Amino acid sequence: MLFVTGPDQGKAPRLPPGRRRPGRRARRLSYFAQPQSPIWSGHATASLRDHNPVGRRPPGIRPPAPASGRVSARGYTGDRPLDLAWARQEQERLAAQVVLADRLGRLERVAGLDVHFSRDGRQAWAAAAVLSFPGLEPLEQAVARGPVPMPYVPGFLSFREAPAMLAALARLSRPPGLLLCDGQGMAHPRGCGLACHLGVMSGLPCIGVAKSRLLGRHRPPSAKRGAWAPLLHQDQLIGAVLRTVDGVRPLYVSPGHLVSLPTAIALTLACGGRFRLPEPLRAAHRLAAAAAR
Image (cartoon, rainbow, N blue to C red; front, side, top):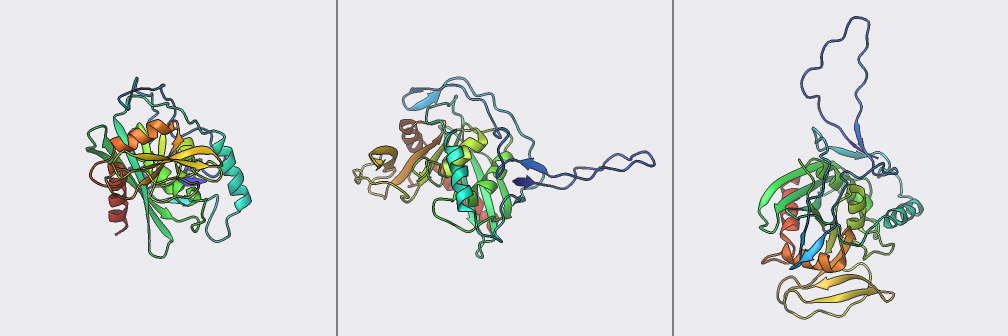
């Protein structure tokens, strides 16, 4: 489970003589246990016009921001090997909840999520950088710091990064309309990459934008920005190899939750500029790196 704790805000009122004050409890965000509900929920159906989602704004539920960004993963700690059999079952359970259809409202806020690790690999700083859409102007940012619950294991990245990312996301004043993360979505051996994990746990649309391939085969796209090639695994379309800058190495884009592949491609390009990575991810990377210094 993921616990977010912080210092008391102000002084508590005095109690009558003979009465004991109850002990403090950490506010719990379900992560390793069965989630009771996503961090945010409720989305309007989207229509597409010129590749931009339009429609009613989703009725987001504003969570209370934790007083501190410190996090700890109580359900798994790095002092013992990860139970891969349990982790596979958890990924399969989450994959069954993934929706690969557009459930976007009017898109005004896009959040990039990234994590920076200490040199010894024991601490993580997760950053959520919110930019306006389509203007891509900075709007809000949040950082969460905590111990790394496990070492890197290929195919299980979400168990290493998602706890801190969800903690940073919960510190935002209101939910963004879309999440971008540096990782895979459905382009994953069990169809549940980091973007799927974050999308299901948060209840928000999420796109995976990875710099390298984890799974599948493809032909190289042409050298022009906007060109893309299908990413296939066992004759199934699992993502796109997308050129975001002329002549620069492509990115591996796959939908995570509440987004279709065509929309994921279009929005990744719409969030880009002169650089290979979309601007929300670049902003989150800079923020996490600065927090770790």
